[in-house]
Length: 355
Image 1: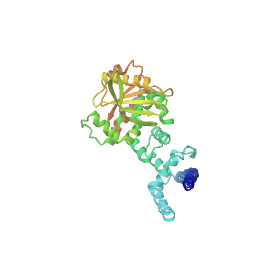
Image 2: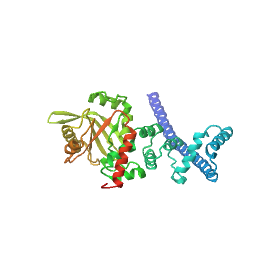
Image 3: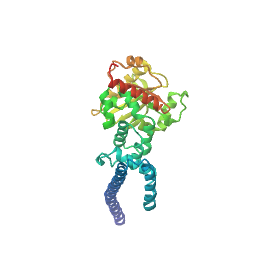
Image 4: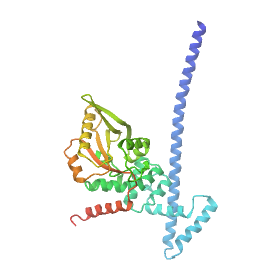
């Protein structure tokens, strides 16, 4: 009996010691991880500062020798060779050119963000339009995009899609894109048109069942969340709603923690129909009454369809008390030149009203 009591006491002491050790380990781990993060940020900031100053020196010498036609390219080649011989990799002609461009686009170092890496800035330097570049820079900071995610958003023309989604109805919102990135204050702020599902790898004109589209999006849920935007969390598919012993199923449900609202998505492999809007409106009423808690904002509904007629959409969605939107989706990267032409037409209309 005494032996059992001793064994239990010994075991309890070991468990207590283990818990105490785990507690210390957690505190030390947090300390070391925070220190590592601070060092990484400091190293990155110092690297950006160095490259910025290299660019400043190059531009300064160019201005002093602007009368010499052969100065630019030949000088960068010679400088690249000497720097590489003495300091190793990182000073190719193309990288020196990027440092030069980096300084020219950020002539005050205070405008450079330590939250972005040099690789981020090299990708941003490929964008000649200053408003577009500013948008992607701000949104990369706000959303914490990796290099791959930034490249994907640029290649799918996110900026142009947002301009066309919001530009015709809200000039102020569009002009703010370049200055602040996407401001998520209202349901309209999260809407894109079209949504791009190139990551599914589906041929452009291949017919697809709604159930197959849903499964494909779930399989690629991380990429779908990236396309949806900031703050989205996946809740599930085929979420059941029961009314008078009749079961209905919402295709996909998400929650946006920034807007504090559920987002219900209905997938349609056809054009927008009034029936789809009515059905989604019923789902939103149910979520508002039965699922939302006191801290949630009204739910948002999006019908993703292959096509929508603007007049039909206006009549199908008009007059509804809920936040319901209809957007097209495409399984390929949109024609960038065509999107840019459409954006330029919208901008021209803003600057030349009535002409």
